[in-house]
Length: 486
Image (cartoon, rainbow, N blue to C red; front, side, top):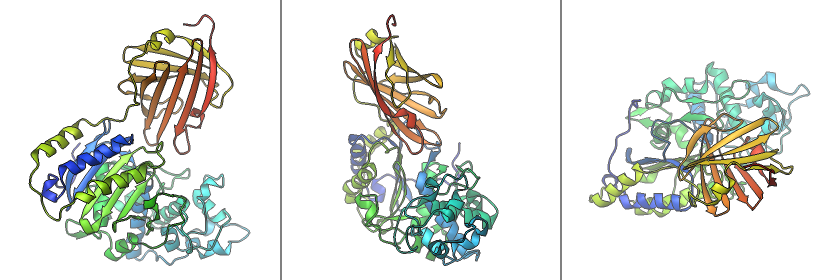
């Protein structure tokens, strides 16, 4: 698959970044056991380093989660330039058909497009998570408000969904179709990128753009360059300057990590060191530092790591950022070649431990009946064959198979969901097996399963790290070997 309008490349030293600093950056991420998927480092508009943790690769599309919000912001800015709306417009005027029959609460009536852009709606929480209604936009007007709009920052994805619905209602087309001729096509954005939809068919502008890491890098580069790409003004300069500037304070945010407290613009986060960022759940990041002409993109699944996003920022500040030179550096062929070798060998994180245990032969084929448990699993058994194995489990929906590699990953459709996934296992001690299962589809999530085997007993712990699904893969259970099994 040929990339349209690829970004130019350079060695790190040519753009003032020591290759050893990028190696240190990778060391920090991997030493902290972060499940990384990709990274791109750009300076002066050129890709200085890029890497993908196999099976991810440059052309594989990835869900960008809340980075999508910044695309919605840009669409609003383009519509403002076209005279289709004003940031001071009251939001209720766009959706009279979705307002409560008993009348609109005055706080709801006062909300403006600008309020929604800077996450200063009248709601403390995302409304479609409070009200069971397939019409997510309607919930935005039906849910009881908590405070006056325009006064406080509260991260509210339903505000972005409502902004997306405004874009689609006024344009008569999807969010990406509206953006394509104005922005995405001129920068060579993937033609097969797409956005998942809400139950009623509005693009899920709050969380669901699926594109490549390079696509995200191109979009962020335009934003960092005041709306210009190859000399063409694609986003109104005044709007993007305002959108990426601090519009509201975030020091009280529920996100307690340092970078989340640097302020918020119009669907863009501010960062330390005078930057801004597109930031999506699980480590989807485009960190833009205009003063240093530096852009770093990552994709990942950091949901099992509560501090994962801050770890990425800290690693960047302590390695690449702290080593920047104003101009080019002398070649460092040894470090550069080591970097090329390192990026060619990246692969998704495996659980720590051994690929072998004498216990595998003992339990191969054994069945275990479990006591009542939150997962609803009644029986399990394991099968091992060389460097692969499988966990079979039975619940009310039948018998399911979860395959895994030992010292490697195994690809499959994840049981009961059918999403593309990878699983790998390791013996953390002679009697305990740990399985990592990664969902790598339109939805991302991780299930970690630890199993301890006694002489004739078993204990299973499952922990899921995912938003809105995999709930039945979380809990603990013990059981006994089924008489005559094995």
